[in-house]
Image (tube, rainbow over all chains, first blue to last red; front, top):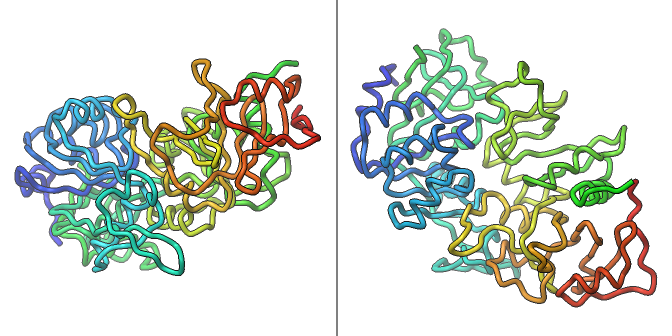
Length: 215
Length: 219
């Protein structure tokens, strides 16, 4: 784990990279990392996230700045720009049920070959997927997701990189921190090692590659 | 006293809640149900972005930016609330731990199948948590207006993409309560000042009508 600056952390991300970005309607999204992605003008990104927030907030900033080639998300309804770009064919959008999305990410991070879920059976979500029957019930085989980078927001971390989350800002963050090649955490507050009780660590420091501290 | 459609629906659905239930309320009319929980009854309200114990909207000065509902609006956490990640949140939903889910609807058909997440070519917001909720909750209650633009939303066959093949259990509109009984939509209550005949005329789907159809007990 290394602490680094906002600028250097984002400079690690090449054009065309796949990013898992924590957050739910922008809450728990590392906002300063979004600003810096826009400032550095990244291109052709694939974004895996619950949603694309709203224009001017969180991932919405990446959409407005045309940094994104493809989105994998469960909900884009509150961002009209994402919907317009999808309907106009300017951006690819894969919609995934929220519980399936988080489990595909979890499978990617936990070394599983996929997950079986009954969510989506008999709907357009099942198109092109293998169906498996277990004890008389049908399930879809949903495949794991991984990404080049996970961009994680933490309320409080320590200088070793142990991360805590608060309230509904937790959401996708700890699961994504397991499923990416490189994990970049933006922490609002940082405290000396030992101040966070082992019981309260949401993501262990061993998983964190870069820590960006709020200035 | 006349009640608006949303109030009728929310008050009636509140009567479905029981002490200690874990309940998920969707965005829109379903959210209003929380306003009509009987005093003294404790309900665990889940917000799928990672909270059980969702409380009222706080005063502006008390807003905690990392505490919102599933629409991203500030909420409060009641004493005894619990926060968790999205994997657990959907484990609660998919795993059958949620007693009641209340969702909005675009169409419900005679088989009790719900369509509530897209209008192809027009409105493609994504399903969010709706497919998991309908597939996994113990009881699915649809809260919606009876008609949209003069057309019944309770139809013979859904023409919009389905949310799940799992049938819903109860539909509550401003005119009626309709239950799925023995695989058939059945008119179980009418709203105050609404007749059985009026409900049947305003409903495309065929409804079974028992000999006695009581009125909703809402005040």
